[in-house]
Image (cartoon, rainbow, N blue to C red; front, side, top):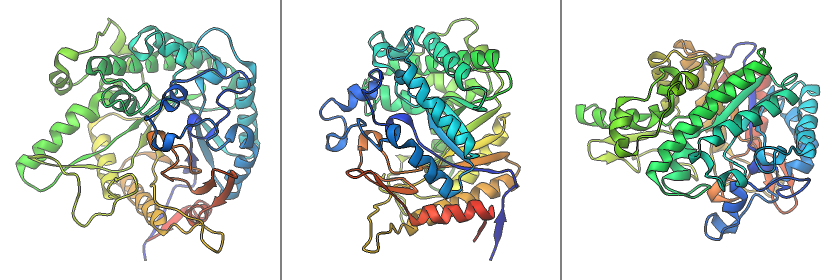
Length: 440
């Protein structure tokens, strides 16, 4: 048996996002977000589900922090709802919204749980969308003002600030396939949005550092490594081409200060408008980068393979392939001058049910997490500076376009009663955190 020990200060935690767990969508002065509008539009979300109530975290946050303490979490990654604190995206502040996050952060600190705050996890205020949303350059400046508001209020206690979660999902799924809010299909707009997200990130970093130079600032990227189906030169070329055209869209401007030539070639006439000084603003030094990892893409010379023979797949239809995490971490570590890395999301959706014994047995999730933890430790031994790991997710929640039909949680949520039941994987994770090691 091999035992993988982690550094004594390794930050073990779990993650959620505001729209996926909070509920209270129209309470205490909260404004409408694009996900409220999108989910309320028939046909956009499975089963007509919405985040109106979700996990009711807005009212049950004390119970949820008690749950985190029971699991032994050292950190909690969450996002703030822009429209809860600024109902129209700018201007008038909603004190009750700010007070909610104040109480949440205070209680996390009292419980000795490090708060990791994400400013934007896909829920743009609808009022800003009505002005053009992320296609409008002014939205980037509104974001900087929002960042200033939050860091002034919480920066004395929150030491880890993330500007954006997964800008590639916002770009590709929100503006090319239209499967996420705001549900637009426009390639020209998509790449302009991508640039404005990066601009907003740069402005946000600058703003946060001006107000609180003592905090850590970063961004969270989701990366899907592109691997060849065989050792053939053709398959390798196909995988590399995909990686260069898609997965570097945000890595390159953030860590090299430019968009790649492959991206320009692919985008063609849809190249975004870039103003002087934008790239320098985007490429400011970061204190950390968060990496969200779920699976990989496999390519042959004929294109992407939909199924890999002999592989296991999650309820999302994603292949389970933990070694791809290690290889991807090693790859980006060698190709970019990266700050310390946190795995900010990793997890799996499986079909979970409450058994006759009142428990939720999810051995596949335990295997999934165990293997990904081991591969992360191996990457660290390869020289990659990984400082922490946030499992997705603390609890089952609103899984965007899939509604409540996909369960990722360490904790089972009965959406009718809002009862929380820690799954076997949650107890297993609690043991990992206590021991700070994993046995293979």
